[in-house]
Length: 47
Image (cartoon, rainbow, N blue to C red):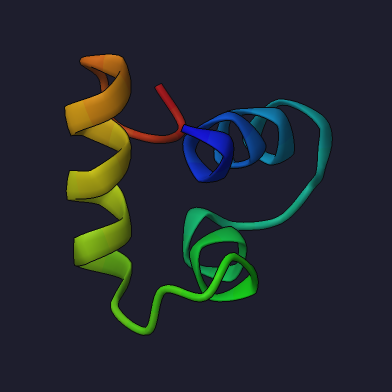
């Protein structure tokens, strides 16, 4: 849960792309990061 909370925080505060945030959190595939985020929050990152 900590990783998903950090992802949501970064998406709300930083001026980085979804891909950059995913890579910064350790995801090596932007698509996987998007699916991970969507499964935890019920919406795609950046929505």
